[in-house]
Each structure stands twice: as structure tokens, then as C-alpha cells.
Image 1 (spheres, rainbow, N blue to C red):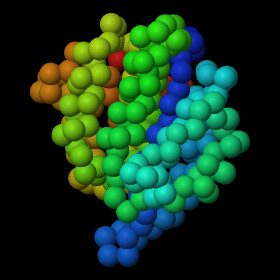
Image 2: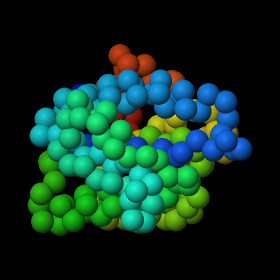
Image 3: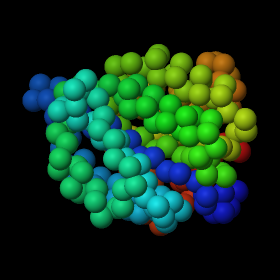
Length: 211
């Protein structure tokens, strides 16, 4: 695959961050997100280079009425710091709502011919195990059943930190979505943030698009 496949697409970035817990959070948890900030901005810049009218951002927020995600459209990378500062993360992660909203938005635009020719890429940055794992699996499987071709939609999960349980769940999404969960296409690609080199962000985005 080549970089032109990344053009003429919309890009959505979901920041699934939880508040640090004194009892449960491993040492260095807060520092991981601080260190990840530059990488997230750089990733957004790479997405924006292919989606110059601005990317869509969802940020987990304790102040959201349902403890879910606030949405920002047509965001430029230089606005990310302000968006982060406006949203204090919730104590528990309800990833399902944010991902469902992003997918519903894509398919609603697709139904009226408002998606770009090559489709969309959704990147999810997550720091732990979501509480709604099976609902997320079903949500993604159902999304694949609405797709006309494998390359129109890709979901990339990027893990912040080294939570072992979260790693196992994300690996299962990557490897078993079609063979065990009944998905029409394998649209999930997962990586640990520390494994993604800044110089290779284009390769990471290309990996999200199903072969």
C-alpha cells in the first residue's frame, strides 16, 4: 500500500484517558500521558496533512453529562493542548459511547454521500482496559457488516502504557475480529505508543487500512 490511500479520507482521533487513581494507578501513569502528549500532537499533524479541513477529536471528560466524550470537529493540531486542558478525564472509561458516536457519524455521512472517496480512519488512544469490552467487539463487528469494501474504514488502537489486560484485549481485537467474532473485514490494527516511531507515522496509518 502507498500514501495516496491515506488521502481523500476523514480522520477521527479518540482520546480515551482516565483519571489517575491513588490506589490502582501504577507509578509513572501521569508521566506516560505527559510524555505521550507530543506524540499525540504529532500523530494529529500527520492525520491533518491528509485531512486538511481539520480532524474530528473525541476526548473523554468527567464533565460530560454521561461521563463520556466531548466532540470537536475540524480541529487543527495547534488546538489540541487547549482541548486537553478543557477536559478532565473520568474515573472509569466508557469507550463504547465515544466509538459508537464516531461510527454512527461516519455511516450517517456515508448514507447521504458526505464521506470522502477513500473513507475514514479512526485512531483510539487508550490507557487501560475498557469496562465494556464485549459491547465494543459487537459494535465493531456490526460496523464491518455495513461496509461495502475493506479499505473504506479502519480503526487503530494505540495503547498508552503497559496495562497487560488492556494489551490482551487489544491484541484479540487485532487478531480475532474476523476469525472468532464474525466480522466481515479485519478493520482493527493495534500498537503500543512506544513502538510507533515519529518518522514512521505514515506506515502506522497505512497499517490500519485492511489489506
